[in-house]
Length: 287
Image 1 (cartoon, rainbow, N blue to C red):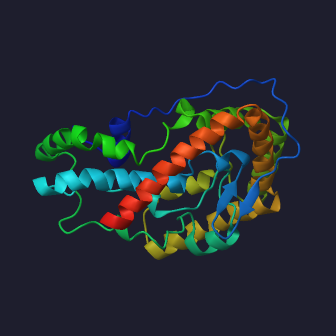
Image 2: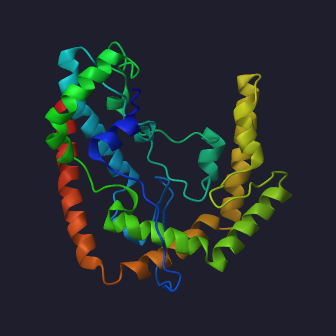
């Protein structure tokens, strides 16, 4: 059985990424807005105060995998690598939105500065297709399960209060006329700049950006083309204020859905905070 890092985490914790069913009678709160943290590349919405952020989830994932490695290494296995997302903090919920980063990185994410624990150990990460590794994993899993649960947040997606509300708010926001109006302005900007916007709710880049993946040739030429396309996409996002506008729509629905659920959200936040502190403490002590 091949086990990847994300699959390992889900298998260990039994988390399920569930879809939400939103109530289309919700009226968004017009006073709620998104805060754009350009320095860190993060879009801050009302539920972020309660939801497990990608950065915090990465901390807990790294702690879980480190705990697992503490059992695997005496058996001759280094364990699986932390997820690639643990190396980055930047968020792009509505496509590239920082032209200055696009001009430097193209479509690549800005790496974290504190990612030393992501460096492969001597000998590299374990071969996840190795039967010996899988046997050791199966033996270690029940032994360290309680430790891993102590450094884990609530189940992902609709398995938590904040996660469920986040999914509902996104679904409602995507159905709001303001959402498609903003997206259409952004798409037209791409067309005016010679790019082809892709269709589909989850499509936040151009067809040319996708085609880059299949291109072969000189790496320097390819990187220049990547940066050119990335800058256009980020410029259009900024010119049409896409990330702020869509973030504000989503924030309005989040704030509306949160009303009456503050106590449950606070309790979930408290428990997650305790587990996050435990994860950080474990990494500080064992890395």
